[in-house]
Length: 151
Image (cartoon, rainbow, N blue to C red; front, side, top):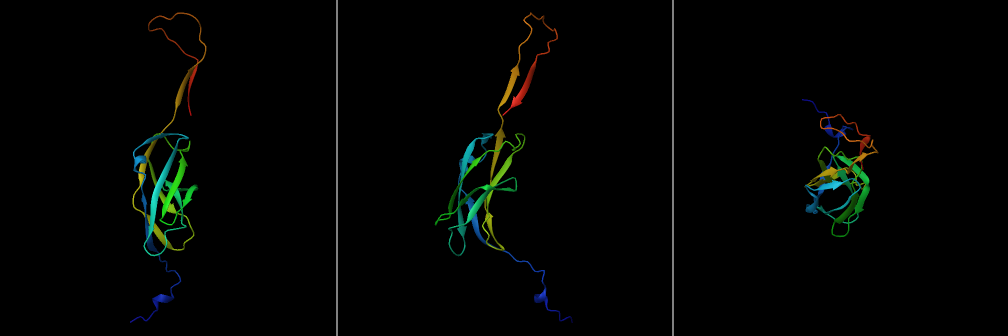
């Protein structure tokens, strides 16, 4: 029998769930927002043992942490993050939104129990420049001096 001591292994990693985060801004879920439009994401952090106060939480969009959009939990674990919809969010995809704790708390972890999905719109403009002042017949070809732009 091998008497190797497994506790002397330097490659052991551990983690534990120390709390949960629940988003409470249900009005955000399934909504469509324009680029540069604002919304407020609210939620509650609940730590299993210990205080809920003082944790920095940041918004996560499509698994990417946006640490500039953050808030610190109050004594009850409540947080409120104001977010401005970025021009870089694709108008053709749904975007998943949740939050994560970005405070340096070691190997422990909080689990966000729900997430929201939003869609993004862009304002489009079709601009037609000046044209020749002449009549056109039905089925006659017409090439306008125009372009399409958005946001």
